Length: 323
Length: 299
Image 1 (cartoon, one colour):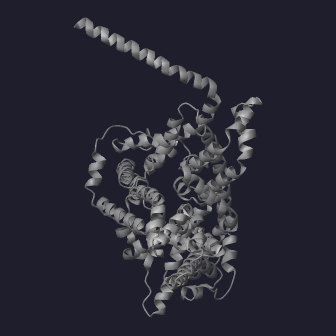
Image 2 (tube, chains in turn cyan, green; image 1 turned 90 degrees about the vertical axis):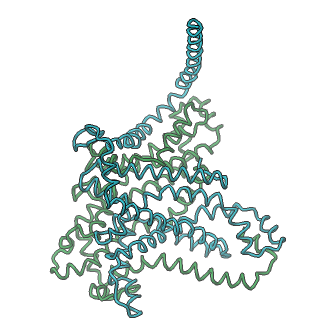
Image 3 (cartoon, one colour; image 1 turned 135 degrees about the vertical axis):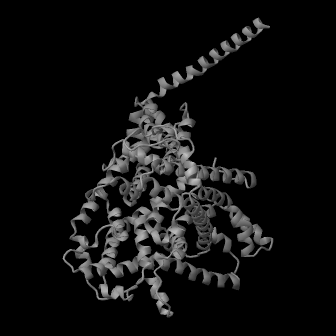
């Protein structure tokens, strides 16, 4: 028995060495043949390693005590201290709720509206007119978030256009930017304003790939235009819709961090403060980097889980997936 | 497709009503999109008293160029503008070099380990280190208050990388085989054969990166401590959030005037910041659209 076992491990070991040797040889050959290609990849790989993967490892400071000026991986283990800290922090649950609400509202408006606009544009006869509307609607996409935020503030200021309209019907002006109750509407409207036109591009491209014969067949079957849209157009752009939906869900947790940072103020924190802005204030402004990292890690894990589950559900149900 | 759909069939009455409604809705979209620009321009050219009274919307009231004079005579504004140009140029060059090199490598189907190289890039689209570890890293590398804090952490945009990879993959293999027969090595092939054929693609990438760096503000906001290092986006941000003392911008005006002038000063700064983008927009728009479409086929 003993001998048998020895024998078998020996053969397994031998087989493994031949296998690895066999595997190593093509690598050596690949390196000899393509070393110039590999050399071109060195700097980009260094970038990914240092600025993408190192920070992922840097999240370890969520479990360690971090000291400014010390190691970027922290000094000593603290276990789940920082996680316990934010799970018992009432502010955290407020910002968590705000994140979900703002994320859901953004998804609710910013996902379907480009589809509607694309369908409307698709019905425009005049090519010049269509081009014109498209060009104008893409414009906000090219603006810096700072400019968008600055414009929003001017529009909703006490002397801005919105309050002029309110004044025209005889109501008192509203200091929108200082009222927590208005933040969500302002945020979502500005988000729609900036993204809806640009969002139509992929749908318009998908619409041109739908086979014209399908419409012909639907018409012969007696389908009116609504039914044609419902039974031919929408199924035709469904893969695009699903892909963009999954990608939107992927950014769900990170809702417009930069824009919120520009638009909010302490008065609107009750509705405007989200996880990413909270961890920015806790981590960077107040300098509790480990605590901030713990919150960030929690957010990133939820975000990744959301994409993976959305992708899996989409693959099972409609057969569209990102990978 | 639209034309085939309508051919030979007289549009029904319902459809004609729909067309009319559609025209109204799309006009509304155009108006809503353009209006904020127009009102900002109108405010920048108006007298403060009219703005504060809530009387300026589309047409400037009390037309004057004082605010333009105030903003353009502020040296901090021009310093920040110059910073934006410098940061954009440096960051775009770094990005283009790294993205082109990696995209070219990834486009070589025969390359051993290619899948892993693609995976390394694509994974970062869905999972990132997050704000705090990045901040710690950039700070500890001593990049604070240098252009590298803006250029390096965002050097490769994976979406752009995939667009470029798709483009390189679409080039005919024969060309590079011919280059190899002529005795060119990989570097020579990339520089003398592939890149000259990819001018439009490289131009599109330059635009993608340049616009995003021109518009970016958060990296500079986070890593630049000194006033004279801020790009124009952060300058504008400080103006609207009020971190910049309005009296500095107001120059010799009295205290009351300064508070009132904030609205015009802000509008003028917005106009002057958005102007370069608006000026190039008509020319760059179609490159962006084609780039996005190319990326979506593969990405």
